[in-house]
Amino acid sequence: MRIALYVLAVVLLLAGGIGYWALDEYIIDHVEIADVDAYEAETGTRVEAAEVTADPDAEVTATTYTSDTTSITISTVVTGSGDDQVTYYVADVVVDDATLIRGGFAEDKFGENIIEDTSDIAEDNDAVFAINGDYYGYRSSGIVIRNGVLYRDDGARTGLAMYADGTMAIYDETTTTGDELLDAGVWNTVSFGPALVEDGEIVDGIEDVEVDTNFGNHSIQGNQPRTAIGIVDTNHYVFVAVDGRATGYSRGVTMTELAQIFVDLGATTAYNLDGGGSTTMVFDGELVNDPLGKGDERGTSDILYVAG
Image (cartoon, rainbow, N blue to C red):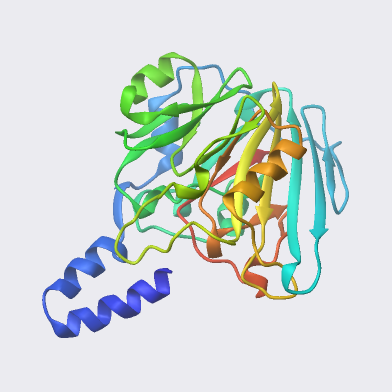
């Protein structure tokens, strides 16, 4: 989408001043925090976070990671056949401390239009496992809390709060503030949607939700590549990446089909993240899925990852 917007912006630039607006809105980097690591160290968190140290005794295979604090299992699921085939990847993650699940930003910067491949952001953060996040950098609204630090406080939609006590909840951003969430023990938030599952049941109306109907944005409805996160029990998470738009390999899924995947996995809560060409899962430094059936990542603004 970023490439298409760039081409369109150049065309508009040739046509007049509106082109600069498009470039400024969707292409030009707007850096608000130039060194996220330093900012987080200076700001500190309101919750006690686990210390991250590499475990030399961790056991790693092509699909599993086991350490004293973390267990990760990657599974590949293929359903249907031919034009109706769907391929998706599930990461079953159990940690002994929820603060081991963290957020990382492209180029270690916070702001709009700053992008980097998921695998590169993961490498920069020494991540064992990562998925693309909510693409916060495509918009200027939403509540953005990562690693116990508040980055943006502009409630606009239904969000997901991930608590330091290992629980997770769907919430209405417009009825609270970032400070209130931090005081309640929220460690990470994501702001995209829709909410897929609550109390173990598929949320009504998810096929009709519109997210970010900005200029140049594509519909999130129909069969699409998807990335989403859910929780089974305290400190027990499931991450799903569904490939799509690749006939004979994976057609993608609807929101209802995505929600059903989480129900079948035993999730009590699940939430949709940025998808389409952004859908990416990385494990032990390798790309797990096949974005758009082409094997190429598309830059994104942020990831959720499991610290090693």
